[in-house]
Image (cartoon, rainbow, N blue to C red; front, side, top):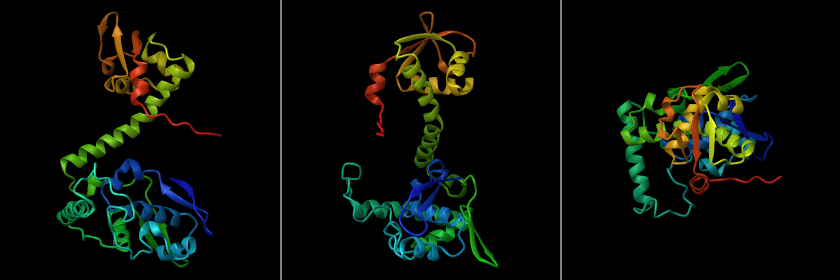
Length: 266
């Protein structure tokens, strides 16, 4: 499964694998992992040839995002970006060296070679099962699995990175559930300060199942956006029974203060 991004050239769309961001590989690999995944994803669609052939077809042989071509050097930062000294006060060179040390240690511990170019990284994609390459009578054909292997299944991630990736996946899992519930409270009910309801009623109103509503409600509680009461007693949203009524008390001021809202024009 892929999502398309419009680009110039004879092949008008670059295809990005839907599992790229949930999998967490962009937090593990050098920055060229993102465009390399788009390149391979595009090669999976009605294309026969090498990745070099595809770069030539789409970008006339030079793509800045991968450092020019497949022999471009891998980096963890964009060379021309303004450095954020608040996020990384040690500076670009020290940060880059630390990232390479962490990345190299993971790979060598797992028995993989440390790549230095985009081409090297593409070969690791094949070794890891992120991509498949087959030589056919018509030429080279590319494929990617529907679900990408997770970094932690292949590499020894440290505890901090493992926790961060787990948190990202959970947020991507629960975010749409929370948005659906909030949409009901805002658009259908007009941001009520208090609502007498139940999980099964909310599920029916939002078109979700009860377990998903329970997850969404629990996330709102954890964020400090609401409280759940039965009578005057504060109750655990994760332990609510589907049919039991409860008072959902929203803190809309807190919600709007801590949520990012995007407005998309016509």
